[in-house]
Length: 372
Ligand SMILES: Cc1ncc(COP(=O)(O)O)c(C=O)c1O
Image 1: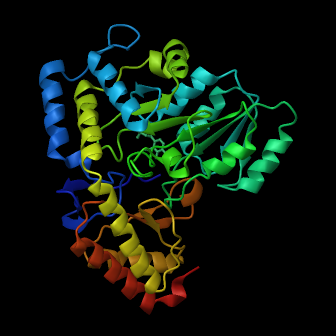
Image 2: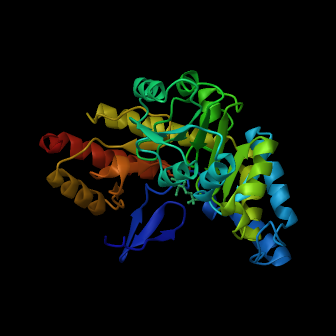
Image 3: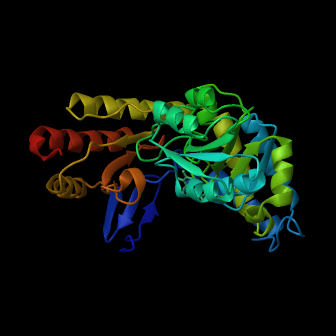
């Protein structure tokens, strides 16, 4: 594996790559809060008051009051009974799974689930059945194979980062027999989806009764850390049983302070979410008009159809020539063959959006032969 080249941010929407300054349509800082002065000031205040790090597990002497403050704010923002903060988003599903282990007969796992869920699945110590990506009939088949009296737990991303599609949680709840549950890794959905940014549960209109929501504070919230949102009972079980919580140092207080500020920003400024989705529909419409086959998904992510190797090379070069960093991904699961994925932000300007649609329009119109 070759290590990706380093990128350095310049302002909200550009990066330095080698000696060039390029417009950036990637990453998951959907509202550019990671560079927001309100978060920076909150982090600086917490750093000055509380230091860089508590240097102990919360189960020993590291349980600083800022964590209770953040958890109360998170439970309020998400309308959950309780929240528990973890050192990062990867650990959130692991901590939930360690707490819930023993309560289920099978794990049902979306084939494109994030690695955090693949690892969390193992924690349940029961057979894992992989179902086709977001495929409700295939899920129903897998559930019927679990046999009578099965008590499965379904593991899925809320919003999938390769194309901005979402898990059909409402349909899943009809198929997963009670008291089976769903564990959603909503790293990309929180802050973005739903009328108030509560994520994929709000988007789907489902209650929390049989759904545990895990998330990260490092994407839409621009800070850092993970969170499990669920019942007080689940929170207590994690505190008592989850080694990923018990044996780790919590989020540094300055980042907890920044996360508190991020929650306030998103609450007070719903216009950012509206602006983000205005950008998405504008770019999508223009690309569709130019002939691109772009799937309508609820997320702020525009994935191009697969290109030939020659087409990929040409488009990378054309983007570079017009001053855009080529957001080409190639790793596991849905991106294994390599995809162009443009992530939009509420803070892109109309000049950036026009630049993007112009280059993709020109490419589509002149190079129809390169689609696979
Ligand atoms: C779906 C998903 N889950 C979990 C994570 C891990 O979150 P964190 O980076 O906070 O550890 C990520 C991202 O990096 C992700 O995309």
